[in-house]
Amino acid sequence: MNCIAVVIRNSSRIGCRFQHHWVKPKGFDTGVKVYNCTTKQKEPLIIRNKNYLTWYTCGPTVYDSSHIGHASCYVKLDIIQRILKDYFKYNVVTVMNITDIDDKIIRRANQENVSYADVAKKYEEEFWSELCDLGVTEPNVVLRVTENMESIVSFIEKLVDENKAYKASDNSVYFSVDTCKAYGKLQNIGKNDKQKSSVKRSVLDFALWKHSEDEPHWNSPWGKGRPGWHIECSALASKAIGSAIDIHAGGIDLRFPHHENEEAQSCGFHNTSQWVNYWIHTGYLHKKHSEKMSKSLRNTVLIQDMLQETTADAFRMACILSKYRSNMEFSKDMLKTAENVYGVFKNFITTCDDFKSQYLKATINHEHLIAALNKCAEDIHSALCDDFDTPLVMKHLNELISTTNSMLHTTSTSGHEAMDFSSVSAVQNFVMTILSTFGVNFRSSSSSSQDFGKIVDILNEFRQSVRITGIEKRDKEILSLCDHVRDSLKRHGIIIRDHGKQSSWSN
Ligand SMILES: [Zn+2]
Image (cartoon, rainbow, N blue to C red):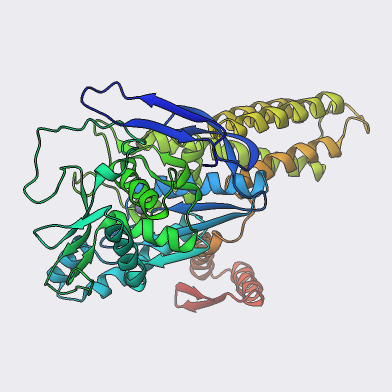
């Protein structure tokens, strides 16, 4: 066993006979510490290969529109992946599954009188489109359940062959939890021996293959049916990455039973004591007075509705201002705070630009500012190494821009020396680089196609009002200026058409 240290804890739960343990991996120490739900403390992030790390994220079951609880999970994970890639410079290989067959998908298809594949395709497309709107980077590899049924069946076959799974009287196949001594390593569970199942050997056993004669079904050595949810991730992640994964991520609600079951059956399949070295779980996003946002609780806000109220940058900022493991309370105030913080940084960038363009005369203390920059860079490095503490990073950045702003707003009396462009540029570059590491880009054009349309709308409406005034007052000068705006925009591919007093545009 590749073990440097083994952390063993006896469960304090009465009736639980399992020991919880995490094996510190062998490999390259990144210098980053990550919270570990088994040892319940931060542990050094050691990756198996210095040149790349593997990351698997549980993807969605595509039967409905995604809500902002999903958004917070995928945005927070995107921020951590960006930190590992863009700040620590690791080659992060990312994999995600899409659950495109499930009882909920079939139910929806029956309600809408369409095929299950149509439902899955529609909501998968919507999912990727919304992740794109939120600025989330697509995974390197995406695997759909229906496209990998053979791999899933052969995964189960091996477990059955090795007596780690069994076919029960209902013709479904179950994983035998008793064959996994470390079951419960992610979350303490008490085993209640008094509870019995009429079908399964143990109440904790879970379905790998669900027998079903109803369409859609797939053939297997145990008859027709569909795979259980947990086995999909184990089979697909093993297919893409193999017998050991550096990081496996998802929302905290997946820790038990989903991730526990994934780990148990994958350890059984690969004959190892640890399949995933690090589990990363994001906290809930919930509305006030409710614990979790979920479709079954009917307390959801859809991503598309949220993006009508605020921008993707503001939502991302809200995620940055919260520790990834913490729960977030969704409210107008939360969004307002995030928008304000975004505005403060945006203003800072503009103020730096004004200073460099010499619209703003200021007194800059070079030594003082560079010392503040150096201190901030060190503090931010420590915060990022400490379980990706983004709120603390924002606190340090805020202090740096306060120091810089106070200099930028101190009027220069003359001083050629006082106009120190290099230190202000250094701070501006640093702030923008760190925020861009989190996926916030103040000068990005990628998220601006929607903004572009809105801006042209505003310009068109303004020109239309001015033109109406020109027509009513028969003012040739105003009308000539309106024509000038129209001709100028045409040179940039925007066509303005006047229809009487109304104007429309296209590009
Ligand atoms: Zn999963």
